[in-house]
Image (cartoon, rainbow, N blue to C red; front, top):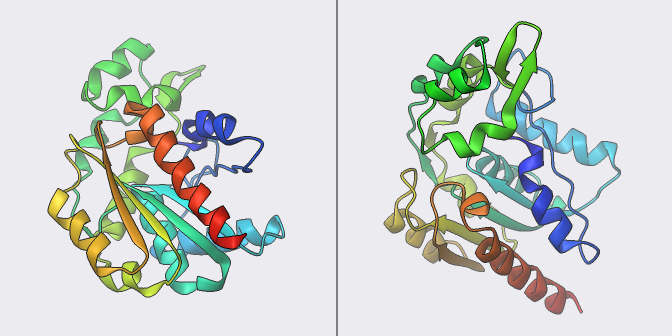
Length: 227
């Protein structure tokens, strides 16, 4: 997915909060990269904040973005006001090789859509591009596989390393997360709350109203704590 997926959230939180959504390397309209290591993603976040002269921020991330966010907080705790982590576990063991069938250009968006799992297709519609050669995805699935392999692993130490408040969000019907793991993540990390919402892996897409309510309530508590 790409930055535009958080446009509805940005509109809903304005003007109380400024939401800046990032197309991460290889995603959306960002260029392809040579590598997709953990250090690459975390370094990109640091450079992005530096470019905007942003000392601190609340970081919100989904899946890969969520791991990027909490690992950034582990390495740069002074730059993270709080974390909002959507569908990102502490142990990642995902196989994304299925996405390789989406590689290349297709004669139409319909033909490309037929290659994608119907449960995943709604999340990828905004990532489709029409080119002179045909319909394609904004990202290269080969990069998705490379990034996924480098994401896999036990990240408990990073999840527990930062002291800031955190909101952990899980989709009740997600095929990519386990309730027991998320309950343990909330129990083991101080100042962390878990909210389980109706929806699948992309809660902000499946249940935008519930997602907005949970995020807004969490941000409201942050504001009160700082007052």
